[in-house]
Image (cartoon, rainbow, N blue to C red; front, side, top):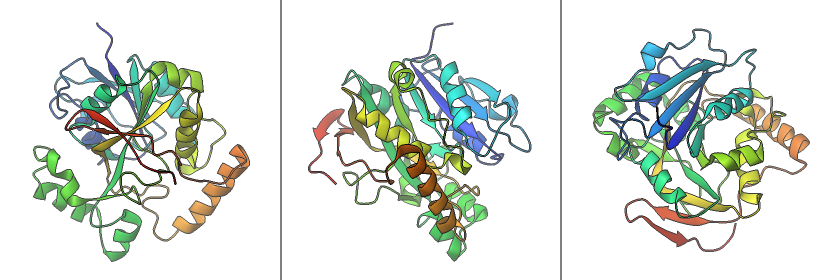
Length: 293
């Protein structure tokens, strides 16, 4: 069997409702210009109470493998690094949170943008399904039933191109504003190897600041280029995540995350100052972002 061009590592933990949708959103029948064999999806389960089953995640034409992290802990970092070690594609993406639906042009846009620089760091847009960021919308009654109604209102998955109509963008300051992290981060496999994957010292729930650190280290590596993918991204489903779905305990969790990040990296959490380049998926063109944060 020929090796895939793209590998996507997806981490799951107690996502029986969300994970099958996420995997479906990465399948050939959903993704534009992504025929069978172009992409493999590597799901690594990080200690779910009820383990996902391969048959529950199958989709027509999808190259899928399911793995289980031994001695799983609250942090997904070890599971991510296991998935990275299994990736066969020349371009590898990591979804640290497996409860995120992909936009239908995500994989094709990342593949096209990756060809425009020898050492690209491809950052996609983060969205939350619903009228506001979910830690806020939950306070007003947003729940999984309402989310299911929203998805039905656009006839998802057939209406996947309309996901942005029922979602909130989480890149504060607009698409050229300061960037903290990307929940679908793509880089060449060789660059992942060079960087050593995610830092295993991040052991807090949800990985703490591991995703933030990964983007910073990638952008700081010699010769790399941050490329933001405009209008393609991932859409967070409500599932009780460590921070995004923690309205009452989010401040306390955020303080712990910040303290762990400072202890490991020796610096406070801060967004990426370099605006990088913007890849416009519709035109296939790169443009220089203006200014610094």
